[in-house]
Amino acid sequence: MKRLLIIFSVVILTLVVISSSTLAMEKKGDVIILKAACDHQEDYSTVQGLYLMGKLTEKWTNGRIKIEVYPGAVLGSEKETIEQTQMGVIDINRVSVSPVISVYPKMAVFALPYIFASREHMWEVLEGEIGQTMLSEIEPTGFIGLAYMDSGARSFYTVKKPINSPADLKGMKIRTQKSPVMMDMVEAMGGKPVPMAFEEVYSALQTGVIDGAENNPPSYYETSHYEVAKFYSLDGHAMVPEITLMSTKTWNALSDADKQIIKMAAIAAQELQRKLWLKDEVTSMNKVIEAGCKISTPEKGPFMEAVKPVYEKYASEYLELIENIQSLVK
Image (cartoon, rainbow, N blue to C red; front, top):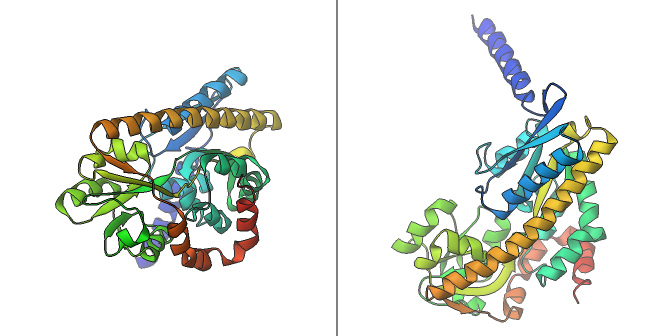
């Protein structure tokens, strides 16, 4: 009986896998349907970029290839969609670089605090030899790197006082992502990292469970965190890019001409997203200033000195790469 149950379970699992695999690169007659995932909401700049990618792909292939965009994490969290993309269940996926590190550790360099001196520096790296090499090197892990997207700079916002130096963080409970790099960064600055789900942050700030959090301007505004944490200190400690990935299983099933079209459409999506992001940042900053938030821009030097242990822990094998990135600062 036990043996029969095991055999039955294996058969069911096999059927589920086979059934799931049909979700990718679906065909309706001669039309190829590609599924694209993004965990942001429909009006977010990354989703709008994917919509443009779909429109251009359909236009340039005369309707032979269509991209269906699934925003709002309806296909799963970033971690889940990365796994599905790797298996070929999802065709295209827009995610942060951070979860990609688990399959391509070298990309951890892009998540280091203060690795980019400015947005212009970041894009010079991403569009230059370093960034494009990274896109190509990710292929053996099951992904094709199509393009990057902008997620702005993350900075601290707090309830009771501004963060103008690492000393100001001493003993403060700061919400972080569930990222070892981010948690160690806050600890290196003297704070107490509190990993917490994003949707719990507002009430945690309001009730004093945490003293502050960190994020980019659109997130600070759109989540209404500015209502309970009025001090926004623009230290710009993290400027982690986002990336548009495609499953190698889907990619390998396309013709060379269609691959080129997909790539060009992804780059066009990147450019639109960059423009929309800049607009969203300006709008968000204006809104929080109007709401009476106190904005400060602290000197980065002391913060950069404080996080040196984070570099020693996570980037010791990539010192040459880090030097090459830093050499591009103008």
